[in-house]
Structure formats: C-alpha cells, structure tokens
Image (cartoon, rainbow over all chains, first blue to last red):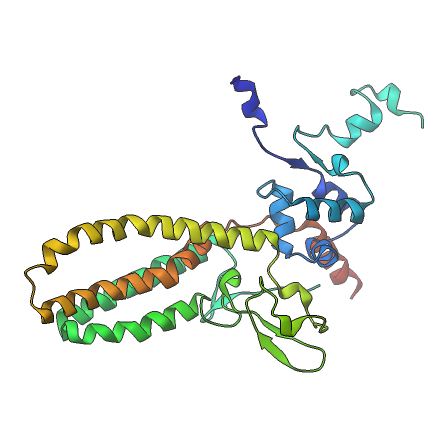
Length: 95
Length: 197
C-alpha cells in the first residue's frame, strides 16, 4: 500500500461549512432543516462523521447541488482557485 | 435560535474539560463511598451503594428524562395537544405515529445513534475481560467458602458490576465527546443583534 494514500486515507471531505456560510446559516438552522442535531452538523463539517446516503441526499437537496459538489474523497481545491483558475489573476478578471 | 445548555447539578457540561471532570469525580466519589462503607460500616451496609448507583446512573442520563448525556436520556416528547410521552428517541412507539410533535428534533439522529452504539460496544467489550477473569477465578474463591461468605462476595462484586453497567457507556460519551468550534454564523448574527438593538 503506497504511503501517499495517508494524505486522504478513507476520509470524506466536504464543503458543508462553506456552503452554510455562503447562505448565512447557523448550524442550528441547517440542523433544523435536515432534522438532525446541531452537533451532527458540526461533526460533519469537521470530517469526524460520514453521513448516511439519506443524509447526504438531504444535504444535496437542501443546497440544490449534486452530492459530488458537497462531498469528495479527495481534498477540495479552494473555490477561488476553481473559479479564477490556477492562481493567475488575469484569468479571473473577466466574467 | 435554540440554544441547548446542559447541566449536571449546576455543573455545566458544555466543555470537554468539565465533562471529563465529571467522569473523574463520579468514579472517585463512588470508590470513596465503597471504601467508606467497607471500612467503617462493614459489608452489610455495602448494599446502600445500590440506590446510590441508580441515583448516579440517573444523573448521567441513563435513567432520567433530559439528563446531561443526551444520547442516553429518555427524551420526553411533547405534543401539540399538551400531552407528553417519555420514550427512547431512537425507537418511535406506535402510539406516537402520526401525532404532531412540538419539537420533532428531540429524537436521536443517525450520528447520535451511531455514537451511542459505539459507546455501548466499547464499554461492554471492555467489561468482558474482567467478566472472563471473574468467571475463571470464581471457583478458587467460592469452592471452600461458606454460604455467608459466598453471599458477601456476590454482593461486593454485584455493586461495581451494576455501577459500570449503568455508567460506563455514558462516561465514555462524556469523556470522548469533542468540543465543537464556535459557529461563525451564530456569532455573526449575535453581533448584528447587539448593534441593532
């Protein structure tokens, strides 16, 4: 088994904290919408808990995003990098 | 915004440090009581530890409604018609089916149930080794003992076993539950509230 898998291991990365912040929601707001405990949202955001498919689909529905936009087995690139390219400010200047 | 403050006899259990202090204090107090009863009052009074055990188990949430260990509490569900029903939140009773709840969030979610199951597994897989050791050593101590001595030994063994049975899973939850980072959205909304009020 190569050691480079230790970087991500069997972790499941997610963008829940970013998506929640974008929408100005508290953990409690999101928890109420998904009918889970607010601590569960915190543990999800920290990557301490992997959700069931049911909860993953509920998150997908709530944010109106595909599941792979919320969860990934590889670390997410920063959104700014994805939107504006590979750190080249010239690419990000126009819409 | 709902805020949930948890207390154990006026001791806040919102930080991991305080939760661990409760676990240490809980077992230290029980050991002190056991020593006190054995030395000062004799094994016959040891049985007085039993009600104390159940009281302490209730404090940790195993036998009470809305105890500090939420996952082990028998949550009381309140209905819009004013009635209430204390029930294990993970297993809805048929009586509750279709009845509107005031706070449906009170039930345990998938993470709660997984955490509780893991605590049960860890606690009882730990207890199995002392249990196996006791089973193997029992003939050595009990074969030549008089009935009175056997009764005394069983009493002395049964109290710690029942204490651990009722308290160890809850103690594991209290000990291992991490602190969450402050919610930035909450602090932001609170700041806005302070500025505008």
